[in-house]
Image 1: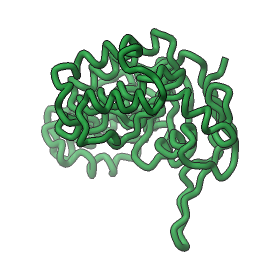
Image 2: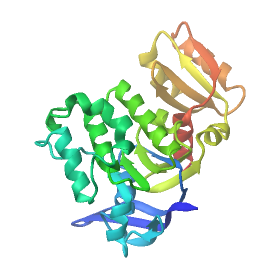
Image 3: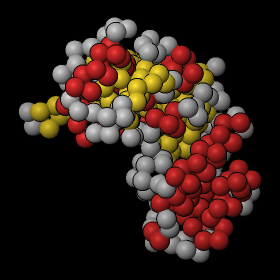
Length: 306
């Protein structure tokens, strides 16, 4: 059964004579108990879509429902059944960890102690800081507190908007372990992220760019369907690789990935032609090898194709 349904959702922001089309006809079906990731760069429309689904803003066109409740007509009931962690920390910074948790429990009319079982695995990280003001917590601990407060009323669907942005690598891993545990308990989770590596942890991923969904599939299916042979390139003159590749007609795409460039070619003769060209331009220790594509490679491919 679908926990989240969206049909032809569109949203445009207007300022004076200018306008930004944030969403362009989004169609989406997310199953109960699914961990769904919405992946895309800043400005792609991730936050706008989530804010519509949690009934904070109205769509210009289209309809959406969460847990069978229309996000416009039934927004009051909807807010009792969902949890929401926004991208920006929005808890009361002058309240302690303990006070924030009890405050949000009271807002939803539940007893924090009675609901403790649901947040135990998260709150154990916060217990040593229970009397510390929220504003004095680290980024990772702030997000764990926000997650605890979003779960304290036992929602059926949890929305998280880029919850690990600006969080250290260890806290990111811990946060995703917690999300996996919640999914295993049957909770439906909708999480947006700009980090492509996090997409592999989701059951399905939606790739979004400029307000349009480019693809929705399991991460393994997205990677499997990458239609080209992908190469990793490195040389002793990496600072000159980008302008030098521009002069090679055989190069179909070239994107910097860490210490390498990821390349695709027009024809099977492309790799050898590329190496010869780089040698002529003074590059040494040229290493060009076939690699398996990742989610980010696939996103760049689909984005270029769109």
